[in-house]
Amino acid sequence: MSRIVVGLSGGVDSAVTAWLLKQAGHDVVGVFMKNWEADDLEDDCPIAQDFRDVLDIAEVIGIEVELVNFSREYQDRVFAYFLAEYRAGRTPNPDVLCNAEIKFKAFLDHAMNLGAEHIATGHYARLEGESPRRRLLKAADANKDQSYFLYRLQQHQIARALFPLGELPKPQVRELARQAGIPVAEKKDSTGICFIGERPFREFLQRYMPIEPGDMVTPEGRVMGRHQGLMYHTLGQRKGLGIGGVKAEEGSSGEGEPWFVADKNLERNELIVVQGHDHPRLLSRELSAVDLSWIGLPPQAGRRYSAKTRYRQQDAACEVKTITDATLHLCFDQPQWAVTPGQSVVLYDGPVCLGGGIIQAHAQFN
Image (cartoon, rainbow, N blue to C red; front, side, top):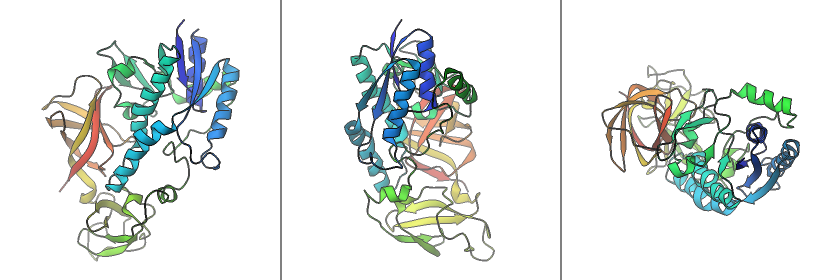
């Protein structure tokens, strides 16, 4: 029997993770990670309710649970980066960094101090092999696969990790929770960034970054409206622009279609907008990425792989054109939609997640 520390969030996935390990005869300890301090009393960031759910889960399963405060680590390692990226006009993915720096670093260190042999989370992903060649694989349930968010993990981290849900479809996880009498069996999955919760994103950012209004313009320079700040928008965004009823110039591409954010001009504080989902300014055949992180051996130049430039995306066939320790250059078979600087591009060799990097630039398809 081994001691396994499970990260309990108050949701059904981590609850079933703990229950499965307990049923398998392991010595299971639950840990609830508190990563955000400022909004404890706000209804839209229900940390207190999540912890109450964790206590109820632990009672049903029959395990001890501990609350651990990682707020300082989160502020230093994740939130500071989050703000810096938005100030630079990019769109970061803090959940990726949270996994690498909090759940599989601060939490892992804490679990080892508790005498754990492994940590476990409710992520939908799989692991196979032994260190130093342990591999991260996609989950069996393609609709729930979360390997994209785990691509920055290193061998010493996945050597200690367990993902018991990797082979299970989500409906079966909920059914197991119902059968076990776990009180959060029907609890809605959380959405949005972990520390922001369900609150309006623009309202949250205004607390930390000043409003800097500017023009929304077409690539040709026609002013279509005003924006309240470049940081509130991301490439491919359609909602919230306030120009839905405005038409492009007569005879132009996409006339009568919705408007989308296509780019940002930081120097002029302009938001570039185009009309039509398939406008060329929204399509990219190539990209470069930096801040690379590989789980095992890096990919090779000249070889073909598949890649995702966002979580909810089908794998896209591509070729690694060049790769160094610092930079990756990919070319896709088909143009990719709304490739966004600051987001992550993650490479796969079949079901194996190789790693990836932060998108720096993209070449538009003409």
